[in-house]
Image 1 (tube, rainbow, N blue to C red):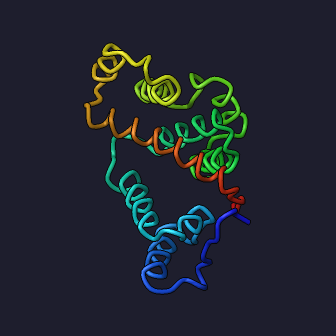
Image 2 (image 1 turned 180 degrees about the vertical axis):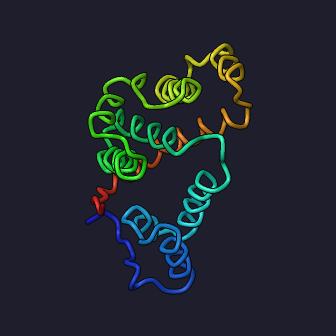
Image 3 (image 1 turned 60 degrees about the vertical axis):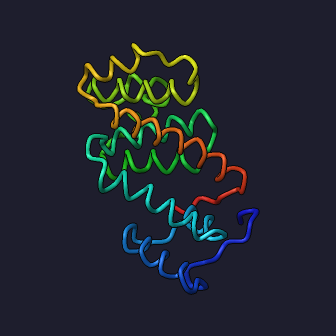
Length: 178
């Protein structure tokens, strides 16, 4: 049970019930992560908009890239909910083997991604772990691979938001529900 009070879908009313309905339609259920934000419906809306943007609108960052990114960032932050959730996406939705997932956790260069995507993955990991070490040549290298500045920012934003989610989920002791 999380450390803050949450509202279960069956107890939601008003705007929160509407938001939960949208989440259920999009994901097939209302996860504990969504319920954690129920203490602040505005944050539910923001989180939904974030997820929708990367699922529906951001086409240049693939699902495998984003799942690897989230898993490896969460791995560094020891957020087991997010590590396991993203590993399950890689295995159950994207067809990776458990050995392939463990290999990428041990060495991000082992990711089953195109070289261009590996470069983005390594850039984002560097950005969230040691942001002061990012240089103009790091950004230029991604441009040479065909990424534009918006895509570089989108990927880095995705990684940075993952750090924040890891903190929130761990601070409030979210329970696994998958």
